[in-house]
Length: 167
Image (cartoon, rainbow, N blue to C red):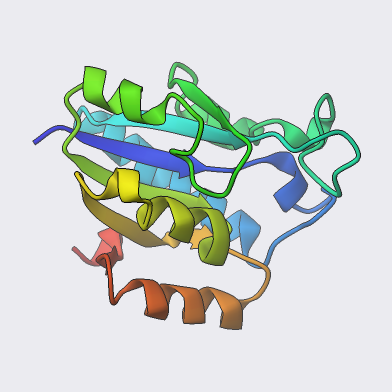
Protein backbone atom coordinates (compact mmCIF):
# COMPACT_ATOMS: atom_id res chain seq x y z
CA UNK A 1 0.00 0.00 0.00
CA UNK A 2 1.42 3.37 -1.03
CA UNK A 3 1.57 5.81 1.88
CA UNK A 4 2.07 9.57 2.13
CA UNK A 5 3.09 11.49 5.24
CA UNK A 6 1.39 14.90 5.11
CA UNK A 7 3.15 17.65 7.11
CA UNK A 8 0.66 20.47 7.64
CA UNK A 9 1.65 24.07 8.43
CA UNK A 10 5.00 23.48 10.14
CA UNK A 11 5.71 27.17 9.60
CA UNK A 12 7.81 29.69 11.47
CA UNK A 13 4.88 31.74 12.82
CA UNK A 14 3.84 28.78 15.01
CA UNK A 15 7.22 28.56 16.75
CA UNK A 16 8.88 30.71 19.43
CA UNK A 17 9.63 34.11 17.92
CA UNK A 18 6.77 33.77 15.42
CA UNK A 19 3.52 35.71 15.38
CA UNK A 20 1.43 32.88 16.93
CA UNK A 21 3.61 30.36 18.80
CA UNK A 22 1.83 27.15 19.72
CA UNK A 23 2.01 24.97 22.80
CA UNK A 24 4.66 22.24 22.62
CA UNK A 25 5.86 23.35 19.18
CA UNK A 26 9.50 22.33 19.61
CA UNK A 27 8.69 18.85 20.95
CA UNK A 28 6.17 18.38 18.15
CA UNK A 29 8.79 19.38 15.59
CA UNK A 30 11.25 16.85 17.06
CA UNK A 31 8.58 14.13 16.76
CA UNK A 32 7.87 15.20 13.17
CA UNK A 33 11.57 15.07 12.32
CA UNK A 34 11.88 11.53 13.68
CA UNK A 35 8.71 10.36 11.95
CA UNK A 36 9.68 11.97 8.66
CA UNK A 37 13.06 10.23 8.72
CA UNK A 38 11.35 6.91 9.47
CA UNK A 39 8.79 7.45 6.69
CA UNK A 40 11.52 8.22 4.17
CA UNK A 41 13.44 5.11 5.26
CA UNK A 42 10.26 3.08 4.55
CA UNK A 43 10.02 4.68 1.11
CA UNK A 44 6.90 6.71 1.93
CA UNK A 45 6.12 9.91 0.11
CA UNK A 46 6.43 13.07 2.24
CA UNK A 47 4.46 16.21 1.40
CA UNK A 48 4.78 19.65 2.98
CA UNK A 49 1.57 21.70 3.15
CA UNK A 50 2.09 25.45 3.56
CA UNK A 51 -0.69 27.85 4.47
CA UNK A 52 -0.42 31.30 2.92
CA UNK A 53 -2.91 33.85 4.26
CA UNK A 54 -4.05 37.09 2.69
CA UNK A 55 -1.96 40.26 3.10
CA UNK A 56 -2.63 41.85 6.49
CA UNK A 57 -3.51 38.51 8.15
CA UNK A 58 -2.37 38.08 11.77
CA UNK A 59 0.07 35.32 10.74
CA UNK A 60 1.22 33.37 7.65
CA UNK A 61 1.21 36.66 5.79
CA UNK A 62 2.75 36.43 2.29
CA UNK A 63 6.39 37.42 1.92
CA UNK A 64 7.21 37.19 5.62
CA UNK A 65 9.63 34.91 7.44
CA UNK A 66 6.70 33.54 9.42
CA UNK A 67 5.02 31.97 6.39
CA UNK A 68 8.11 29.88 5.55
CA UNK A 69 8.24 26.20 6.40
CA UNK A 70 10.35 25.79 9.53
CA UNK A 71 13.95 25.07 8.47
CA UNK A 72 14.17 21.85 10.50
CA UNK A 73 10.93 20.50 8.98
CA UNK A 74 12.20 21.39 5.54
CA UNK A 75 15.69 19.96 6.17
CA UNK A 76 14.40 16.47 6.95
CA UNK A 77 12.51 16.37 3.60
CA UNK A 78 14.04 19.04 1.36
CA UNK A 79 12.94 17.35 -1.86
CA UNK A 80 9.32 16.83 -0.77
CA UNK A 81 6.67 18.61 -2.80
CA UNK A 82 5.10 21.70 -1.23
CA UNK A 83 1.34 22.14 -1.55
CA UNK A 84 0.18 25.71 -0.91
CA UNK A 85 -3.23 26.12 0.68
CA UNK A 86 -5.46 29.01 1.70
CA UNK A 87 -8.07 27.06 3.72
CA UNK A 88 -8.03 24.72 6.73
CA UNK A 89 -8.66 21.66 4.51
CA UNK A 90 -5.40 20.81 2.73
CA UNK A 91 -7.40 19.38 -0.19
CA UNK A 92 -9.57 22.45 -0.85
CA UNK A 93 -8.46 24.34 -3.95
CA UNK A 94 -5.00 22.71 -3.97
CA UNK A 95 -3.18 20.13 -6.06
CA UNK A 96 -2.94 17.64 -3.17
CA UNK A 97 -5.56 15.24 -4.48
CA UNK A 98 -4.03 15.17 -7.98
CA UNK A 99 -0.54 14.60 -6.55
CA UNK A 100 -1.74 11.69 -4.42
CA UNK A 101 -3.58 10.17 -7.39
CA UNK A 102 -0.51 10.42 -9.63
CA UNK A 103 1.54 8.59 -7.00
CA UNK A 104 -1.12 5.93 -6.34
CA UNK A 105 -1.34 6.79 -2.65
CA UNK A 106 -3.86 4.78 -0.63
CA UNK A 107 -2.93 5.71 2.94
CA UNK A 108 -2.42 9.12 4.56
CA UNK A 109 -0.51 9.69 7.78
CA UNK A 110 -1.17 13.25 8.97
CA UNK A 111 1.08 15.41 11.13
CA UNK A 112 1.18 19.14 11.75
CA UNK A 113 -0.44 22.18 13.23
CA UNK A 114 -3.15 23.10 14.45
CA UNK A 115 -4.77 19.93 15.75
CA UNK A 116 -8.33 21.30 16.02
CA UNK A 117 -8.19 23.17 12.73
CA UNK A 118 -6.07 22.23 9.72
CA UNK A 119 -5.16 18.72 10.95
CA UNK A 120 -8.79 17.87 11.71
CA UNK A 121 -10.22 19.51 8.59
CA UNK A 122 -7.76 17.64 6.38
CA UNK A 123 -8.29 14.28 8.10
CA UNK A 124 -12.09 14.65 7.85
CA UNK A 125 -12.17 16.17 4.37
CA UNK A 126 -14.55 14.52 1.94
CA UNK A 127 -11.55 14.28 -0.37
CA UNK A 128 -9.77 12.16 2.26
CA UNK A 129 -12.61 9.63 2.34
CA UNK A 130 -10.95 7.49 -0.35
CA UNK A 131 -7.79 7.03 1.74
CA UNK A 132 -6.95 5.09 4.86
CA UNK A 133 -6.25 8.06 7.15
CA UNK A 134 -4.53 8.23 10.50
CA UNK A 135 -3.38 11.18 12.59
CA UNK A 136 -0.03 10.95 14.37
CA UNK A 137 -0.78 12.30 17.86
CA UNK A 138 2.76 13.24 18.98
CA UNK A 139 3.34 14.94 15.63
CA UNK A 140 0.51 17.44 16.10
CA UNK A 141 -0.08 20.41 18.38
CA UNK A 142 -2.18 23.53 18.86
CA UNK A 143 -2.67 26.55 21.14
CA UNK A 144 -2.64 24.59 24.41
CA UNK A 145 -2.63 21.06 25.75
CA UNK A 146 -6.34 20.97 26.62
CA UNK A 147 -7.52 22.02 23.15
CA UNK A 148 -5.05 19.53 21.63
CA UNK A 149 -6.35 16.64 23.75
CA UNK A 150 -10.01 17.52 23.15
CA UNK A 151 -9.42 17.74 19.39
CA UNK A 152 -7.63 14.37 19.26
CA UNK A 153 -10.34 12.75 21.36
CA UNK A 154 -13.11 14.07 19.12
CA UNK A 155 -11.19 13.15 15.99
CA UNK A 156 -10.61 9.57 17.20
CA UNK A 157 -14.32 8.83 16.72
CA UNK A 158 -13.77 9.20 12.95
CA UNK A 159 -10.14 8.34 12.19
CA UNK A 160 -7.41 6.46 14.03
CA UNK A 161 -5.23 8.68 16.19
CA UNK A 162 -1.95 6.85 16.71
CA UNK A 163 1.44 7.16 18.36
CA UNK A 164 3.99 5.66 15.95
CA UNK A 165 6.50 5.19 18.80
CA UNK A 166 4.07 2.80 20.47
CA UNK A 167 3.10 0.85 17.35
